[in-house]
Length: 289
Image (spheres, rainbow, N blue to C red):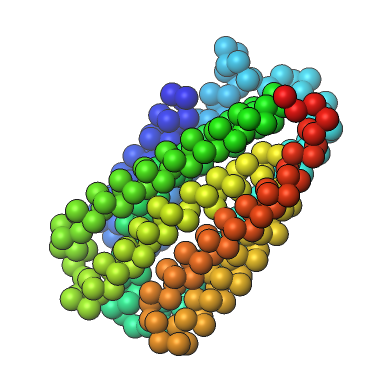
């Protein structure tokens, strides 16, 4: 656990230092930020490869494994990873389209949207941390054929994620006056910023945890295709289409956040309906404990 943490920390610090030097000292502007980010990530990747190939590293790949790959395991990995990559691609494409919608509301709305998007990440950080560990936990439960453990950990992780996001939302709300001063928003932009964070805080607390923990459980049960299909429906019919519809109805920049919340709600409901059919258990139905 320590190696990934310190590697990520070192890469982030290198990125910050590079951004500071190239942006403020060398005056390279956006190109300097891009160059610093690329250099930091390349350095992090090089260090990771070096550490992985250390002779004393437990998971060090052998020459035999590199020259004679296990195609059966590779097929299983690709079966999970390709739908996940497609899901990530379409989700970011939808976010890009929605970001373009925010620009149509004017300068104040664009600034408020960018600020709320940056600060709103902190409102969901606890649930993001929980979702990172959820997939291996669910996978181990499936491997052990322990149905009761799957349900136990799902309830427990949901509770932790929702309480964590609620605490983070309350903390951000307490810091809003100071954050507004730091961001130098206009009075109109500040009002939009506060409303967006309020909507995002409610959605992050109530909707994000079930949507993404259900996704982790479904993915761990080797049903990545289901997650991809649900993600396509929720992103394009709710996050994108509903956001544009609400914007046309006069809801302004808040329509983006309402559409995002609706997307998470749809994702949670669709995956819950699929899980209710017990299809995720059929593969192990013969020998569940």
